[in-house]
Length: 529
Ligand code: GDP
Image 1 (cartoon, helix red, strand yellow):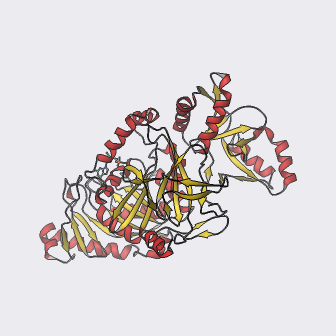
Image 2 (image 1 turned 180 degrees about the vertical axis):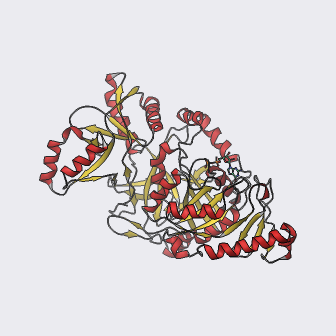
Image 3 (image 1 turned 90 degrees about the vertical axis):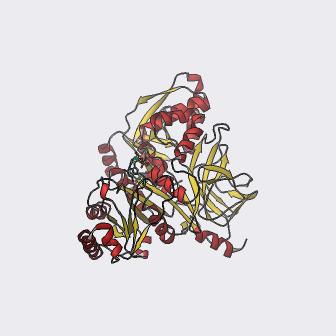
């Protein structure tokens, strides 16, 4: 395989996810981007297609009933000669661990902010996760067709709360009913907004130049003068776009618009494919992997069950980091030390999955998984190396699992083991007793686990409260100290699904005191795979 071809294909890829607070407009903007990518004919069809597909799947019924999206999917579409890979993340915070891990597989993120609400909780949290890898962030301030807050105030809030500089790229002309369009600060073009173009690609009606008499005709002379002064003020008071600062995660280019009105999205997408980074280098325990490298590598960041209800299969989502995937190629499944032939990987063109002949760095392929693949697994062209930085996050909620039928213990253990390998839950087995404790980031995860245990493993279980407040993974270089700790603290110690030693703290105070008493022991809030 020629490395030049790989470098060329990699350079075209833009792999990203959206971070936002629920209701800011993530779903809507996703639909509009697919519309621009010609991946769907009419916006709105993404949702209905999803609903149709899920209607036949039992456990996804739960998702429908609650109106949330449990699944993470991948959508690929072309835009301006680039290939965009959008990794969707669950909207509900109960599934935030999936979201966190998906963010490890992207090269940049799009932050969608509701112009009326400004920076909200979940955005703050997701931004923290992006910071772990200094992911570049591009911002879209949405819902300008409504009465929003003063755009300058919203940018100030982003700067202070999220600690990132804002560089406005477009600027809104009016808002709500008086929303007229956006002015592109770098091209000196006004793009005019017309209502009712949400379901198709809007015509790009423009006025070239802020000083054009057409602006006066559009707004009236005094309003046009006001706009010119406002723009001057904005230029003076805000940061100028700086590509390097954006790539370092220190500055975010900001675009304004309305996802529902399908307006401002095109300007944002134009900027996104131009500025967002192509597949970035990634760390492994052996060497840094560069996308252009001819040797195939990738890692699994997500496992999803029952995507196709007819097959009840599990799909492992693998992010290609270097090299090329070709149908029927062999790859090394590094953790189990085996070469496997992958004949039927899936790709994700918009909302349909299809079989791929080839795929490139930045692309996501789906591998059929019959229980041998875990989150964090590395696949290579034979090389012994593992990608790092795809952590488990300490759960925040815990339950003891009890069987209705005690004879089903084996099936329960197997089910929990597999569900924890998929990342659906985390399981802990105390050193001192035979309890099985499950941990999650959100309560809904427990429902999903109970449901899947019943459907897939025929195990009926109930949850009981358990006196655990938080978990920490235990590391210690000093074997003697570790032994002593294991003896003295055994009542609070457990092994997790991957056989890692974990401290289950009944209270925060207990955790703090234990940490003070055992300074040689490390208590980590994340666990590498
Ligand atoms: P998500 O929860 O972030 O995926 O948000 P959705 O895309 O589902 O949008 C939440 C609500 O806001 C829906 O009722 C949308 O129709 C509405 N919405 C999204 N974008 C806009 C917009 O630009 N203007 C207005 N007025 N409403 C919008």
